Each structure stands twice: as structure tokens, then as C-alpha cells.
Image (cartoon, rainbow, N blue to C red; front, top):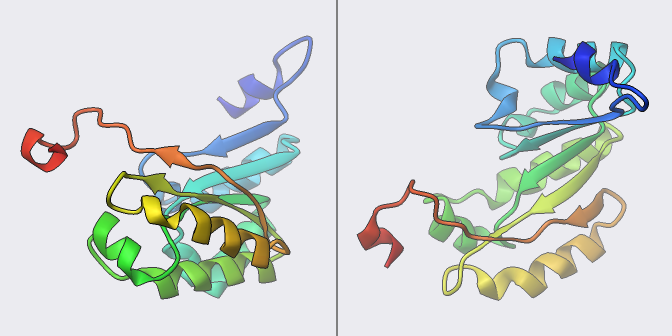
Amino acid sequence: MLRRLRSLRPVPCTAIQFTGGEPTLHPRFLDILAAARELGFSHIQIASNGLKLVSREFTQRCAAAGLHTVYIQFDGVGDAAYERTRGRRLWREKCQAIENVHRAGMKVVLVPTIVRGVNDDQVGPILQFAIENRHVISGISYQPVCFTGRIDRNERL
């Protein structure tokens, strides 16, 4: 698939983002990054919850394999937002992952899923966090929640 993207004409694909579930869990994740780099993709991205990037060694290995940018799930500033959206405290892990990405020379795009009444109060604080960390954060992709069948009617209400 990577070779096919690079062979497109008249203009070959130059950027790729690995998503779906959690790409860092794939047993050959680092090999896939390296293959994309070797095929000449100029910008290699992942969409991730960032939890494996808490490991500084793993994050360094990702950068060495060719990763450029991490689109990281980021639902708010502080643990309260994650307790509401993900069911557990994740603030420390998010901050550590972002720091590790910075130390590895890569960039972060914050990707908050915004749910009215759950974490919509975090829109401003997320922006402020991004401004304060602009040395590593290159953007924010605010995503309003979309119910596509993975949540039952009672939870949705």
C-alpha cells in the first residue's frame, strides 16, 4: 500500500498518517514507520492516545524510524477531563508523552474530542496550553463528538 501511494502519478503521495485503533500497538509499528521513510514519505504522522509515548525510549525509536508528528488524543488540561471522557486520570501521561515527543525532535497536534457538558469548558484551556507549549505543539484539531453507534442510547442521553 505504501509503494502504491508513492507511485501515484502525476504527483506521488508525500504525507501519510497511521490511524485506527492505536497504531503504536501494531507489532511491526516501527518497521512500518521505517518503510514509509525509506519509500520517501516526507511527512509521517500517527493518531495516538499517546500512552506508549510515555516511554522515552519508545518515542526516540519512533523518531529514529521516521515519525514526524503525533496527533495526540487530548481532551483537556488536568485529570478531571480525562476521568469524564476516558474513565481514568491521564494528565500526567499526556504531559510526559508531549515532553518525550519534544525531546525526540518531533511535533504534536492536540486532538480533543469535545462533548457538550462533559469537557466543552476545556476549549479555552486547551488553546492556552498549546500557546504555552508552542515549541512542540504545532496545532489543535478540535473534534465535536460524533455518535456513530459505539454508545448505547441511555449513555448518549
